[in-house]
Structures are given as C-alpha cells and as structure tokens.
Length: 210
Image 1: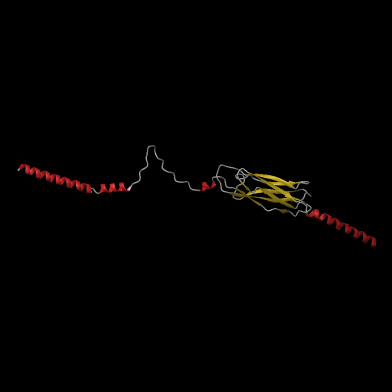
Image 2: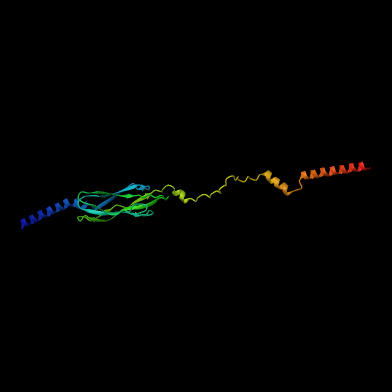
C-alpha cells in the first residue's frame, strides 16, 4: 500500500511539473494579433503598408485584415482590402498593401479604417486578442479649397476699339446744368449789348434824317 501511494505521489509530481513547463507555451500560443499601418496620413497616389504580427509561432493561425470606408470609398479613393492573412510554422509577421487612388477632381480630406477580425487556429489557447482599428486620412488634393469657393463674376467683354465710358466730372455736370438753364449770364450780357447797339443805331438814324 505504501509503494502504491509513493508511486501515485511521483506521478502527481511529474504531472504538476509538466503543467508548469507547458503553461508558458500555452499562454503564449499566438493568441494576440497586432497591427501596424504606415503611414497613417497619405496623399493620392501613395501606397500604405499594413503589417500584421502574432506574438508566437507555436501553431498555425490566421486573421482577417480589411479596410473600411468612412468618408472615403473603397474602390474609388483606395484599393479594396479584405483578406485572411495566414501564419504557418515559425511565421510571425505578414504585410499587405493598400493603394491610394488618384483622380483629377479636387477633394477635401477623407478617412477610412484598417482593422482585424475573424481569428482562427491556436487550438492550444484560442483566447485571441486583436489590435484596435487604425484610422487613416487621405489628405485634401490640390484645388479642393478653391473648388468650394464661388467663382468671381465675369467682367463684360470689351469689343476692339471700344473705349470705356469716362466718369462724369463736376465740369460736365455744370455744363449739363447750363444747358438745362438757358438764361445764363452770358446770354443776358449779349442781349444787353444788342439792345444798346440797336438803341444807338436808331438814335443815329433819327438824327441823320432830321
């Protein structure tokens, strides 16, 4: 009976030692996926590198990486991304790319996100942990601000040889006033001169006939 108890104790001790030895491997069995995106602020025509990393290579595993539009639209503002990234053997890092699409239209800044989902594998410890989504910004393209502003009113086209009307001056206004009032000082003086001359002529003629 004593031998049986001793043997059982040895078995339990060995089992505990095995659990202690296996515990670190089980706790670190590719249960965490991280995400790195560079750069996070881009211009049209740029390329974004998305790097997915797992924290160990103990078992085969995979995770889905995808880009989701916010104000930016997949397929027109950036290349659509949605694929399952798989890790086998000793692999701990995989990279994919996103192309920022260019067009000739001026646009304000737009955003989209890159994130992880649907982890698979890691039968030893399937307690997955996924990194938070990363917000991306596509910077405003040239001409975006001026495109939002109203265009200035077009000036009337001036025909060849056509001169612009001269501004009305005070002298011109006085001449117009003179034309409106025909009885001017000059006319009065001229009338007086004519009357005096006519009177003198009549008087001279009257003396000459006597």
